[in-house]
Amino acid sequence: MPDAISIRGVTKTFGNKYAVRDLDLVIPERSLCGLIGPNGAGKTTTIRMVMSIIFPDKGEIAVLGKKSAVESKDRIGYLPEERGLYRKMKVGAFLHYVGRLKGVDDAGLQVRVKEWLDRVGLGDTIKKKCEELSKGMQQKVQVLASIIHQPDLIILDEPFSGLDPVNAKMLRELIDEQHQRGATIIFSTHQMYQAETLCDRVVMIHQGKKVIDNTPQEIRERHDPRTVLVTPALGPHADVERAIRGVEGVDSLESINGSYLARAGEGDSPAAVLARIAARVPVTRIELVRPTLEDVFIDIVEGDAPQEEREQLRAALAADKARGDRGGD
Image: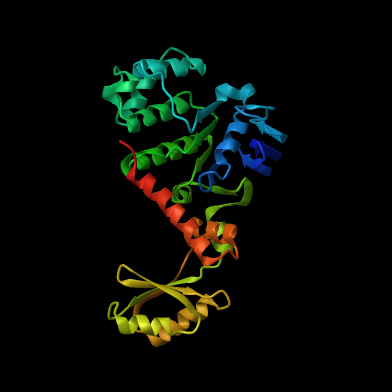
């Protein structure tokens, strides 16, 4: 399968700071790839270089078989991190204008605009000025502007930022529809759970470096689960908690929703810890918990870092997720 995007040995600096360092990345055609990592990891810089908005200090980037995105611009849909609309234009006129810029035939374009607006619940805004819409509505209009011409390659920079859960679900459905149509899609996000539910490929970036590149399932399978979920038969209480804490190999214990999460120590077998807990405490449920992408990311980038630093990173990722869940207006 041909490559939609090919990045070879790319480095980009701003002053003495490396934004991207020695990046190699190949995105095959028709794939759905999530570019993930915390804010400041280098995701937006990478996307801007792919779009020829900025240029690498060294290395090569090919897009849709061309030497730059400029040569394939009508085949690309792009949602930048910095949102922007022609605020005085009416919504329908704006989308019609973008469609014509991208080479869509005028015949039937007005119908297409109306259908897309209806699809995202904005059918009654077609004659409103863009500035009259809420931020969440404006973002949906900009997403439509990036796909109105049915591009072969869709690049979305933090598309879920500012969306409430209902609109985030709608956007996930739109992305999936475009992927099923045959488009190659790459989107960046610091909300890793979005990539986990959508993507067939995940690329993790930390401090400008690629730290993992694989399918979500393979990523989880390669990183052993070290947490045991325990639901006591008699419910949570102090005696049960003491019993679990006293099991050999239990490094830490967290109470959550009537169950416990027991973390196996680095030198202990999680399966052995599970068996010891089951032998000591009557349970209705006990199992190894598969790690999330956030868990894997923390393990990879922090390694042997002090527990305090690991907790700070986990807190930062949780705060990013909470901001996404709260959404915009």
